[in-house]
Image (cartoon, rainbow, N blue to C red; front, top):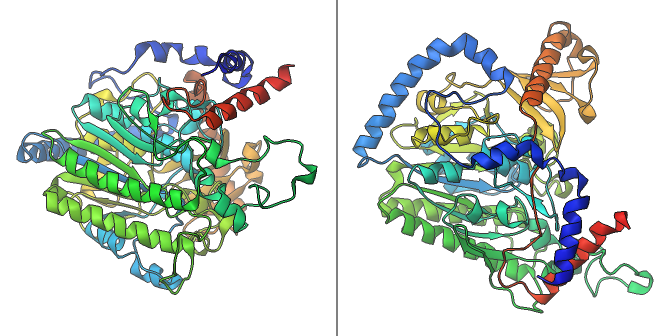
Length: 574
């Protein structure tokens, strides 16, 4: 890094008021990652204790049987808990995959994932966060991203990311003896501490940014007018004064690779080289091959593994790398979804070949609703729910989710119990025998849903979810009833919009009088308890730093972008 860049970074640290709350997590940061005694309870949000008070006896009985089941599996599996393989697909609408009937309605097929869904459990009521970054944070930490200031999705340079004070599932499982690897999208920050190989993964191959930079901001996208106003050959710059306004993905860091707690290296991008849709496709193919390679390497080790593969497709911009349309649907989005379905089928087949299918929990799901700005080609969601990516309507936060664990999870089962993506953190830790690694010094939103997976419908332990959009609470769901809080402000719930999601999944016909007459005070009290709990356990800031510091081979054009970033950050203080 240049001397000027470091001076600007120091100024950035002083003037970044939004992140001046670092003292709030000083205790957490000094504690580090540690194991906790099993008898020290996990700290929960207030609503959980309401459910526990009424169901504790039944849950204790179920847990005793679950412990016996997990012990029996471990004994039969050479003393090891199950492997975990987590596949998170970006921006797919509810109903996009997993059902041959719904495939037929849209004019394409996803046979691999459809078969996988038939072999395991369909989580019919899986909730996520409204967009990619917060959902990934919720999964990795078991916490709503508002708690660590990671509720927003950054597109370009940001200078912040997931703080190293957070404890991730990879760290929890690694401390319990798991080998860990991450392949594909990450999108939880452009600073060193936020990257997967500094958050518990032994190996990681990932892009620093997300598909916006990779498939929408390149020259091909500009030439096809997927993006307007960028590129050197797409407008007359007669009136252009600000040469820093337009994003040039070729100047940003693209894909990097690295190992645990070591600096990373940018790969397959040389100084002066342009980023294209072809290079984006090559990146996707590379991640697929690396996922298969990691599967083989991890399976050969004498330890359980946690492998997560987060494909960048199906989100794609220009048609450049799509030679022909092969479905009646006739769209690039569907072509990429069909491609990823085949890739996932290859990985599942490889598991059979390696003989690890029966001792591996596999989860396949979406991260949020479809990309509404590219409707209708971008997803099925609007035909089921209203809204999509970026929204706290059901279309933004309801996704397809399937879990398979042969002989333990009933094949072909469907559960209507509520599930939140953060629950996977706690559930997988439990199954892995790693619950002692779950932090006890902060609120954990994820609930252990092992009983639901092993016992089936009606054995879930969640009947509520708080739906944030960045830092605002925009909706609360309790059972099938939803309270919408437009703009995150509500003074009198009796005047607010309530929806019965069973009767009105599109949230078009409020039943505010019918529900509000008895439920308004209940929901207001629920919200008040939630915020009182936040006062006791306040939200913490993200990790901050110099973008891209920790990449050992920055290109000159990328260094210039970082210098521009800091200069622009300083201008309000001039």
